Length: 391
Image (tube, rainbow, N blue to C red; front, top):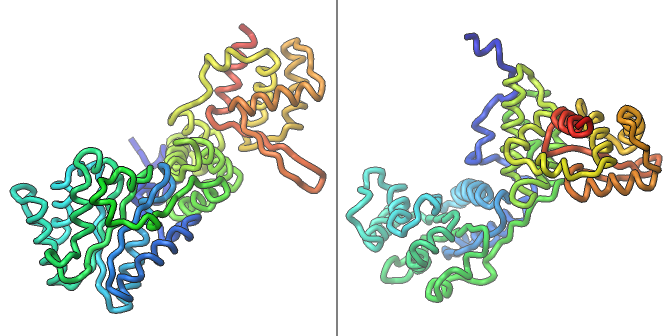
């Protein structure tokens, strides 16, 4: 089979759609990055350690910001004559203190055995390595709540006190702890005393206007030019802004982008369409179940059918276009047309209940309401509603 002949070309570099990829720029996270720099610059200027918490919901850039910061801070410190290194530990994978500490040792000694040494013994090895290399090490514990809940706060306590005289004469380990919720409250009192309450950086959900440049940057580096137009990128940003773990989820948006690109390629096309994005969202998890559609009133079905037809080849339509087509569809199905006020009441109800997405904005001639679909393709929605109307 000629695979090249049958597939479209949308994705240029799939690695850059990976959750592990660290882009050079992080739109919407400049404030958090500057706070990290403000806290950590003392490592270089005054040789002091820092312990910091990053917390916020899934997909808000905590992990990628920590990685990007460590990479850039290492370069900045080198220019200032200070050697910085960092090790990143995913505590969901390494749920006990010994396994997490082994990852730190392994960073310096790839041949170090994974059993037979206590946490304290491994810390002595790390101490020797840091003194030998004259390094300051930043230990990043991602999803640290998994470690705390499984094995307590002992490792965090020992790392935070690593620079006390009995372990090391210099301050050469700092911590970044990452969790969805504020892990400070999970720490035992002994470990908590090593952390300043003010050293907490919040990562809120991304508003839609910040998701657009994030996804746009990812498009630029991962897809071929012209693979998605601006309107469909807006649709993708809107869906990511509402979907995922309660919305504002950049990871969810990147996942949808990759799925939509693969759908387009499998269909032999070189461009992502609105229907590809809706199909991708439906595969991840659709709100629009058949049971919910069956529970709609007849007039709501007519309006939804009108919207589906308007959106078959478009990312967005307007309420005016839906209303014009609604009149035709009512005649097709022998349904009495609603007046202007009641039509708007039903349309707003469909929006409030999540069947349609609506946005109202001002233009030169007044106010326009744009309408989109996110959970189902327009083609599939049209077919389902038609079947219900005829049945």
